[in-house]
Amino acid sequence: MTALIVNSDNEKNKRYELNKDVMHIGRDVEDGIKISGQGISRVHAEVFKKGDSYFIKDLNSTNGTMVNEKKIVEEMLKNGDVIQIGSVTIEVTGFSEAARKQARKPEPAIEFEATDEQDKKSSTIELKLDESLEKSSAPEKVGQEIESRDLLTLYKISKTIGIEKNSSTLLNKVLEQLVNILDAEHGYVFLRSTDSPKITGKLIPKAVIHKSGANAKVSNTIIKRTLQFSRAILTTDAGRDSRFTASESIVINKIRSVICAPLVSSGNTIGVIYLHSGRISAILTQEDLELVTSAAIQLGIAISNIRAHETARKTFINTLKILLTALEMHNPELQGHSERVANYSIAIAKELHLNENEIQNIYISALLHDIGKLAVPCSKSESPKEHEEHVYRGEKMLANMEGFSEFLPGIKYHHEKENGTGFPYKLKGGSIPLMAKIITVANAFDNLSSYTKSEMENVPLKQILLDMVKNSADEYDEKVIQAILMAYKNNSLFTTKNPFDLLW
Ligand SMILES: [Fe+2]
View 1 (cartoon, rainbow, N blue to C red):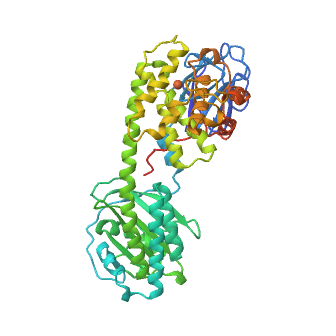
View 2 (spheres, helix red, strand yellow):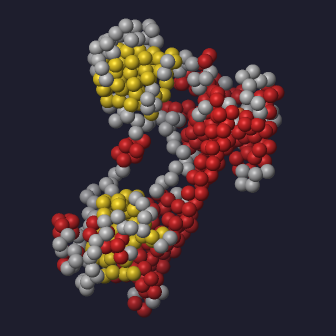
C-alpha cells in the first residue's frame, strides 16, 4: 500500500495510508492528513490518484509545496520522493509493482512438489504424449462425428496459434475453444513459475474460465501426477480411483470428471491444461482426453515459439535502452525524456485504436526519436541550425540499418508542424506520417511538463494540455491532440505499460 510518512515537531514517522482517491493535507483538514507547524495553510495540498499513479497538487497555499526541494503546482509522486510543506517533511513510500501485480491476480498459485507415487491400474485413463499422436491418427477407434469434431477443433486451434502473437490472448482463446467444445464448467491453463526440469515450485494460473459458479475446483493430486509423469489424465469419477481417494481435495470437491494434460516446451513440462465438469450430462470421455492432449501438444510448441520471440524482443529493447543510457550520459538534460515520450506515445496510439504492431513500432521509434543527439556536441545554447542537425544525424544512424526502416518516420519528422513551419523538412499536415505526429505531441507535452523547463514549472499538466489544444491547428494534428487529452482524462497517460513487457 502506498503511504506517506509524516515527520514534524509533533509527529515522528507517522504513517498515513493512501486509501482514497483524493486526500487533503493541511492544518485544518477533517478527513485527511492533518499536520501542524510553521508555514502550513488550512487546506494546503491534495494527493490524488490517476490510474496506478499518485499526484500531489498545491491548493494555492501561502507558502507553496515542495517536492524534492522544487516548488510544484502539480507533480507525479514516486517512491522515495520527499514533500516539504512548511516545516513538515513527508516521505512517499510503498510503491510496489510486484505487490500490485500480485493483488491483480484473480486465482492463487498452486504449490506442488514431486512425489514417489507409483503407476497403478485403475479406472482412470492416462495417456502418454506419443500415444496421443498415434491415437489421433487411428480413426477406427472413434466415431466419425467425434473425429470431425476433433479435426475441426484442432484446425481452429491451429488457426488461433497462427494468428495470435500475444501469449496471454492465445492461452485464453485456446482454453475457451476447449471449454466450449467439451461443455466443461471450469477451465485453466497453469504455467510453472520456473523452467527447471525438477518438478517443484508454483503453478501460476495464466488463463481461467468458469462457466458455472465462481468456485475453482482444482485437484492438486491430479496436477502433480500430470506434471511428474508428463501424462494426460482423464478421471470420470475421481472418488472411485484408488490413487486419488485419499486426496482430500477430490473428496471435498466431489470431482466427477477431470481432464488434465501436460504442456511441454523444449522437452520440459511447463504447465497443464485442466478441465473440469461436475455434471453427469457432460462427463468427459477418452476421446475428449485425446483431443485435449493433441491441443496441449500444439499449445506447448506455440508457447516455445512465443517465448523465444518475446525473449529476443526484450533483448532488443534492452539493447536500445543501453543506447538511451549513453544518450543521457552524453546529454544529462534528456534524463528519462525518451522513455516518457515513448510511454505518452503509446497511450496516444491506444486512444487512436492502432493495432499492436503499430503500437510497438511507435514505442521503439519514440525511444529513438532523439538518438541523433548522441552524434552532436551537447550544448545548452545551440542555434536552430545546430538543433536541426540531431534529426539528420538520427536519420543517418538508422537509415542503412536493416529492420529499422519502420521506425524512421518518428525520427525524421518529430519536429514537423501541421502548418509546414516545423523542421527540417517543413512537411505539412497530410504528408506527415501518423507515427511522427504522435511522437511530436508526446515530445511537446514532455518538454512542456518536464521539470527541466523552469519557466513552465508552475503550470498544471491539464493547463499545458489545454494550451496545446489551442495551438493544435498550427502545430499538431487535431485527432492526435484530442487523443492525448482523452488519455489524460481517462488516466492512461501516466499508466500505459511498455508493450514489450513479458506476459509469462
Ligand atoms: Fe528532437
